[in-house]
Image 1: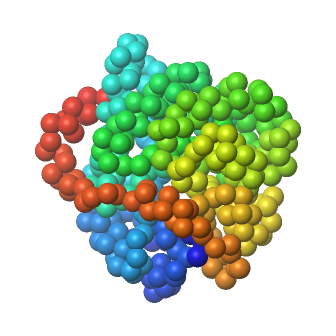
Image 2 (image 1 turned 135 degrees about the vertical axis):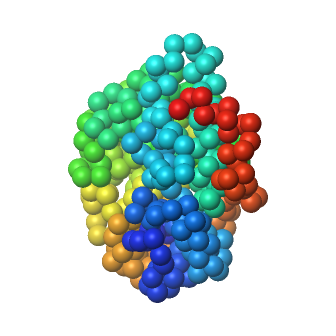
Image 3 (image 1 turned 90 degrees about the horizontal axis):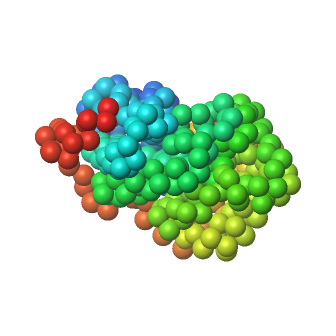
Length: 330
């Protein structure tokens, strides 16, 4: 079966939610702010979702810090990664990045969530949607800080996902509401946006491609492109981690056709797991489609993103010296 990550509308599971989570192709759930009312409710929702799925279920969230942090009450307010540039001392910046990577990952896993889709490896050039989500406007600085952030995530036991390959930061348009095009050559992209991905490829457990078209290279957005996913990522860079599509309901994905066509194209291009969020009808359509079967290696890659062991509770975590140490960067 193909592997699909869906969302839910509220703070409790509906009968339809339970039915969809039990579908063989649904192996992932992404949570949003609308799914959070309290820590206790969130943990119960996660328990119910795993029970309804009755199989390994990869639960994810976008909890990068700054303006992209889905849960607030009871969680540390992680600063935006761009704000690390305010720390003048380089060693301190690196220490802060590692501590914040650990803190974000440890708190998210403490409530039962497997992964946060992080870090952002885009360059802070001109993008409306990236901005201070990026570590820096300088690729080499992104590589250093993101490396430390990933080390912190790994220390907490969380697999990391670099996004948005091969780079969303050098186009102004927001792929949530537009169809961005980046007219640079492959050589120009290699020399700039691609550098953090190249330097960190051995540390990355997952990658999420951008819904950006690079017309000099391929007419399809990166997430639907065999050139980007197979030729560059898998063959040239020898990446053997998980490739997640970005949300197929975003405007930047519409060039690939209707929802069923988007799903088929993304999977054939090389995505291991596809995301359909904020479009329940679209998710149902994908489940009704004749999707390409998942290779065993692809399923194994997705399973490696699951938590390897049970995390301590958030209450217990907050009593540790490690948690106190990370608080100084907030």
